[in-house]
Length: 371
Ligand SMILES: [Zn+2]
Image (cartoon, rainbow, N blue to C red; front, side):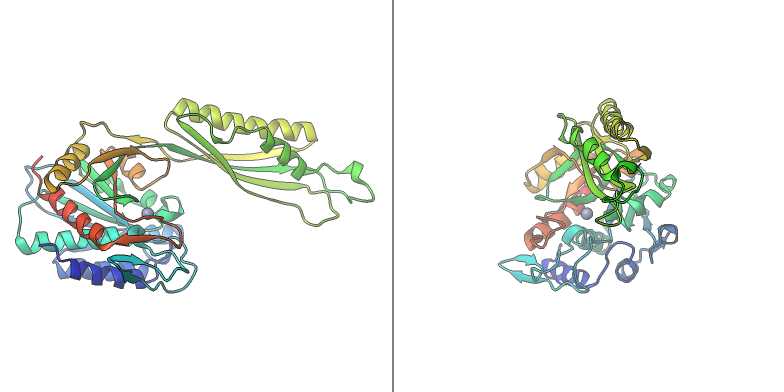
């Protein structure tokens, strides 16, 4: 049986262990210990070395009935910057919150705790289950950097669940956009702003013109775009010769994404040409769009489990990214499942203990469900 006291205690302990992106080592060791207690050996890959972190992704394979399709179960070990060294969780009326000065880190530690609890019950009961592949990633919050380093060729899963979405347990994300990052630098010409402004070409002014002409925000039903960072200039009295922009575009449609990125680049190009400057740009596909059909194995399994546990089954489209995109790109039908937390990445982040228990029950039922 799922033991709520045990999960609540463990989750609070997890939350107290700092594990912001690239600093997951201590928490990873704790998770390794929990797995070892269950007789599950996990391996750490070299992702940490490659991305400048202190720890790699953890991967465990749990043998099971080979007549059944292998399941991938995944969550991430890192949290966004907490704002403080240590997070102090507190429980009131069955809800865990931080002190109000930091995030809570239930994103994604609640998923890690629930997954471990489900495995505990599975092992204790010696219940029959399919082969399982467990992946705990690092640096998810830094643009899926850990998962990008994970060697997906090791996976044999026929269905994947990444437990990493806000909202009540039972909901899953079946559709997420592709994501392009745009780094642009506009180069102008420096000159003294008072003595010889005619000799300068302001890169900041060109950037302003470019951005003012861009379609940004929700561009259409499929596509969003943003310029999120702008920096340039050296002093009040110097015409700036450099201005850099960092932006992004996301879309469920690859044609629309291509058009949007093209449009943003054209705006930058046009403004630089008009202002007598030049540009350097770099566009990178950070991850591909992913989508599963209502008839795919992970969706069918989730639907059946929800019915069994009387949970509200719901599918939705997401505008964000998750490790799901990486596993899906490797050919595994994969969904992002709700963990039960609310307001992630904010000091108002919280999760009810009831949701943590439901998630553990959901995972256990998934694993026990016959396809
Ligand atoms: Zn997350």
